[in-house]
Amino acid sequence: NTLMPVFKKARFGGSRTISDGDDAEMPDLSESDIEDRRGGAKHSVPMVSQHPGGGDAEDDAGCDKDNAMLCCKVLFLCLCWYTVSSTNNIIGKSLLTYYPYPATATLFQLLSTALFSQPLAMYWRVPPVRWNLIGWRYYATMIVPLAFGKFIAAVSAHISIWKVPISYAHTVKASMPIFVVFLSRIILRERQTWLVYLSLTPIVTGVIIATLTELSFDITGLLSALLATLAFSLQNVFSKKCLKETRMHHIRLLLVLARISCLLFLPVWLIFDVRYVLSNWDSMAGTDWTWVVGLLLLDGFLNFAQNVIAFTMIALVTPLSYAVANASKRIAVILMSLVILQNPVTTANCVGMGMAILGVLLYNKAKYDQNREAQRIKLLPYVKSDADMINNDPSALHASPSMVIPVMTLEAESRAAKNGSVFRGHQSDQQRRGDGHPPYRYV
Image 1 (cartoon, rainbow, N blue to C red):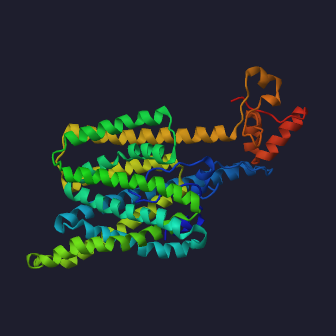
Image 2 (image 1 turned 90 degrees about the vertical axis):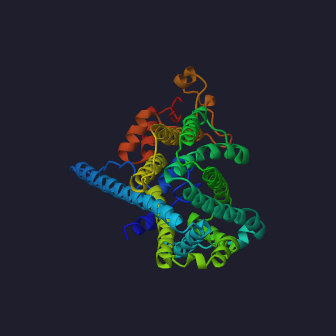
C-alpha cells in the first residue's frame, strides 16, 4: 500500500535495464529522463510563488515540508530495500544449504516474477504488447534470447551463493561495470570517458584481493558468479536496446521475459533437479518438505519485492542517488551475511571487498558526470572565441545542423528560475537588450 501510490504517479521514460534489482546497473539517463523517473517535477527544485502579500514564505514552508516528507519516504524505502535484499540472500543461502538444488530455487523465482508482475501491470494500467508492430522475427531474435539470458543469470547466481559465501559472491558481482563498459563498446559502440575507465581499476583490484584471500574459495562458485555477472551485463545492454527499439513498457517486458524464462527453464529443471530427486527419493526421507516449500515461496516473493522497491527508488531519486543507495545496499547485504551466517573473513578480504564497492561508487559517479556532460553539449551551443561572445556574433554559434538553440545568460536563468518560467525570463532579457539578438552563454 505504501509503494502503489508511488507507482501510480511515476512515469518512467528513456532507457532502462531489465534485470534483478540486486544486480542492475544504473541506467544511462538524460536530464529529462531524471525527471521522468522521479515522477515529474513534483519533487524537483521548487519554484518561487509570485503571489503578492507574503505568499512566498508560505510556499517555501510548504516546499520544505514536501522535501522533508520525500526524504522520510526515501529513507524508509532504503531501509526496506536493504532489509528485503539481505533477507532474500540469507534465505537463499539457507535454502541451498539445506536443499542443494539451485534449479528449483531459480524456477520459483521466475514463477514469482511472472505471477506477481501481472497484478502490478494491471493495477498500473501498463499497455499490452503490440506484437503486430514488433514482429515475430524480432521476437525470436531479441526477446527470446533475453529470456534465455535471464534464467542463465538467475541459476548462475543461485549456484554462486550455494558454493561460496554471500559476501564473496557479491564482491565478484561488483565487477559488473567492467562487463557493461566493454560489452557496450563492442555491441552498442559506446565510448566512455577516461574517468570511467579509470574507475574500473579499484573494482578489478578489489575483486582480485578478495579472491586471493577468500578462506572458503571454490572455483565453481567463482565461475558461477562471473557467469551471472556477465549474463546480467548482457541483459542490461540488450534490454536497453530492446526498450529503445520497441518502446515497450519495462514492467511489460519484465513480465514477458519471466514467462518465457519459465517455459525455457522447465525442461532444465525436469532433467536435473526432478530426475535427481526421484532417483534419490529414499535418501531424502527425512527432508522437511513444508520447510523447503516455505523457503522457496519466501525466496521468490522477496526477490520480486526487492525489484519493486528498486523501481520505486528509481522513480523518487536521481540516478546518482540511486547508484549510491544500490552500492550501500550491497554493503548492507555483505555485512548482514557476515553477522548472521558467521562467515570467516580476513582483514585483506575486507579490504578487497571495500575496494570493489568503492570502485562501483566511483564508476557510477563518473558515468553520471559523463551523461550530464553529453546532455549539456547536446543542448547548449558554444562560441568560437571570447571576442565572438563579447561582440554577440550569431554566426559564431555552433549547434545541431538542423537547429540553433539560443541559451539564456546566467542572469536570465536566475530570473527565470525565480519567476518559475524559462520563457518569461528569456523574453524579458531580450526586451532589456533591445538588439533583436537572443542572449548567448559562453561555454
